[in-house]
Length: 386
Ligand SMILES: [Zn+2]
Image (cartoon, rainbow, N blue to C red; front, side, top):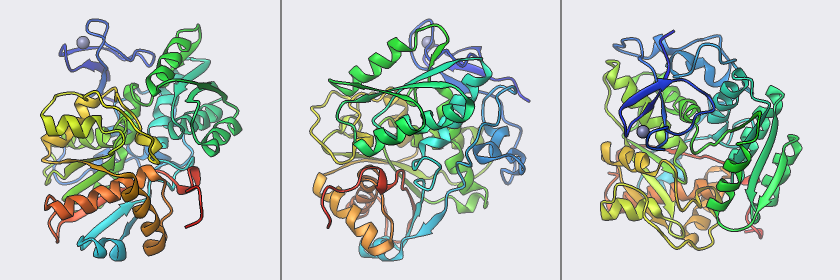
């Protein structure tokens, strides 16, 4: 297996892998896992381990050390379904959804949680600490339970009760914190400094992005022609778009030839630091006043890897679009009514953004589109029956 390092993109230096190291010791910037892939020609078959469970099916593509155990709850391999009715009603004739909510804990976060917890387990950590608005906390708590690690999950005091109940059921200690989302993260980062503990941050840990790379690897398994022209992601911290961009960039460098999908950022108008940055040409997230949103999973005012998320959209010719609360709610209902898909508000924002991109002409009528349906509607249901 190829050597795995941690790379600081800002300093252009590599340091030895360390599952507890999240930031560069020189510049305090976040680190990426790095490894050379084998040379590829026509497909990704050399990167597939047929017998491995969950995301580990693509173990040779993941920049993680060889001693990391194959911790899995069967995450990944989510279905891709055509949206003939909903897509047709918005002029999207080739529109598909990848049903990420069909994951062990109900969201795409399982893709990243498995390698984060596995890498910390390999390092002998006794307790993981995470901060989350809900889905990432549930994912980290579930995989920690499976690995036999203790878990403390710091959550915003206003997080949906269904999500908190799920986290508690996995045996994790739920620690509500008042104030902003950033206050919650600060509390977790501080607690993670205790002896034997580690910060299993979904927004900072490099292994999380290694896991989310599997989203596009699954699309690619059917061949390079199976990639769509457009990928639309709901973006809070951007874990999924970062994984897609990193995977496809690495595959290109390894020699695989394919048409790069345009990667689009969807945010709620109530909290749109990356859309504002995209529009103004800023390199990183811009300061925003946030308002309440039903898209709680993307209610992130200061995404830790925001600059890399913006780069993913810009490098691929993508866009960044904000959608209003009424558009998110109407889209959530329409997806359930027209297609039988019950998604949370966060996911509905990506579909509403896809419709807007089509209306604006950024997506043409016959273009192929895959939208990430990231989280289950059961996690955060509408307050009243429609
Ligand atoms: Zn650095």
